[in-house]
Length: 424
Image (cartoon, rainbow, N blue to C red; front, side, top):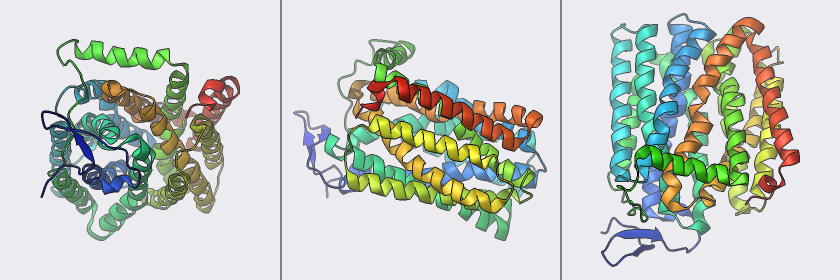
């Protein structure tokens, strides 16, 4: 039985090309389906490991919000230095090999972390070093994964592919922290991290049958990696719609994202007097909200004026985050995180689709490297700054302040930038 995509075109030299546009579900394409299965396990680990490391630092090592911020900073800081180069590599080298290599690196690091906890050798310095290595492995693979989506599906199925990928990420937000909490509560911290190691191993198996189309015409020897990256930067800067989009992604990466994905866990423990593990439920409700809005968007199809919906989702998300910082009871977080998730589904589906749908394939890897840097790579810096600010004004006030900054910037761009509102 052939391992290639039956809907794919074939060039004269027999290489697989982009799939023919036939509509329907992107999961009907074997290549994308293999990538999606791998993504389910990858996202489970990525969303759970930040929670698990925070839990380990706060409850296992007796640290505080600043210690948690330092570990999350170590986990994310490699993105600042690696995702742009990884995006350039994704436009030059064999993408399947690059993706498998990054996953195997993550597997080795997670196993080492599990061993250290099992042997009771873990401490803050070791946790930071292993978090740094885990972040490096993930940073190399993420732009490749995102660049592969438009290479494996046709334009008619691109937003369907983005939608089902968002559902995979959503499932990981719901299940990842909850499963780690269940395993950790029952068998201890080490078992929780061994569980994540096993998930990575299963995810790697899904990449074995993956067949990736050959690169679009890219002269790998024509420019240096840095020059190639700067070509992508110039492309984004020259497009007034995309540069505003990237500005908003950068703002979210420095404000709302770290406030919700990192500081909220410490807020639950230190200001709402709950265990750090109790943050799993708000995260799960946020994931449920993302799932619901992602399904709605998938059913609606290729919506016009995606730029407008993206910005409105950011305004709603910023408002919910502001209110989170003003809560004084755990139960109050639950509806706020759910509504945050509803907005988050529109945010995720729209921003990635806008970038992938408006970027030429030869630049896709490098532009997705920029996207990863803005959407995720800045989170550790935001978490570090948030920890320092929270130590002065309090975690809740810091969360609301970050949300207020985001709201003002997004509203300004929304009112002054018609081009982005009309972008589809």
